[in-house]
Image (cartoon, rainbow, N blue to C red; front, side):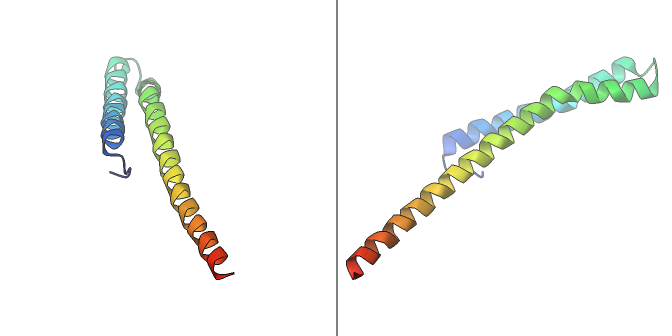
Length: 91
């Protein structure tokens, strides 16, 4: 887990698994549905079938990245406040 908040990390990782399953199911079912028409058409429909899951993965990864960035900025702010307090004590 990349997030410090365990409950949020569990939910996001679960949703990532669901999104990957949606990619797999969408791609395979679309491919098998249109395989008898044309192989090229089956590949294109497979890609289109996988798009909703890929968009879900992209959004969840964006949420994870923003949350990690926010946590890192909080740590940096705390350290900077400590440095300012230490500088004021020395002056």
